[in-house]
Length: 175
Image 1 (cartoon, rainbow, N blue to C red):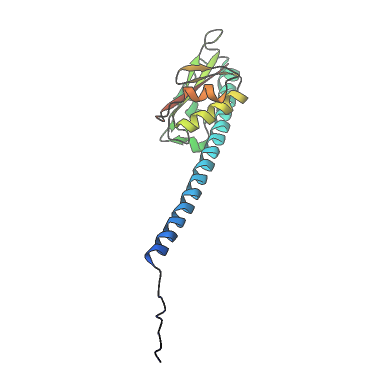
Image 2 (image 1 turned 180 degrees about the vertical axis):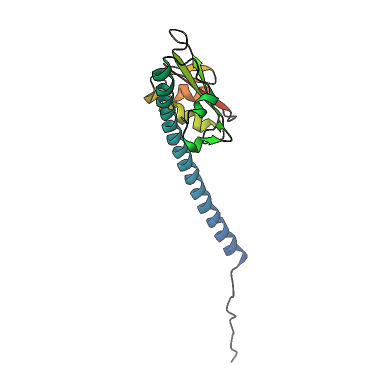
């Protein structure tokens, strides 16, 4: 009588290893994609809040104290400690995507009766989401890459103005 000795397999086969690596890669991709979406939503929400704080601070510091927005400028806004600390780097103001945020006087009905806040270097998705939020809550004029956005703008209208290259600029005019 012959005895058959079956060797026990030790370790993983190449196919089992590849299946495991593929499954792990898919899980990592799902987690990273979810994190990126969460981070984008958080950055948009934070920047909308920052813009609203800036509007209130500039309005109080310039119009209520000086009676005009004529002297609104990025250096004076920074010097008046209006931007939140997390936005300031090396004496300049930045948004969550690393783009510059700047301030200037504007005229709507009369000289220097308004001011602008420009936020630059926005990726396409941030541009769309930020514009949607601003249009829904902001009573001033909003421009995307120099094109005025109507108050009742749809996502499609906004999306056509936000460029995929990722260097979008939103300018808000507050009066």
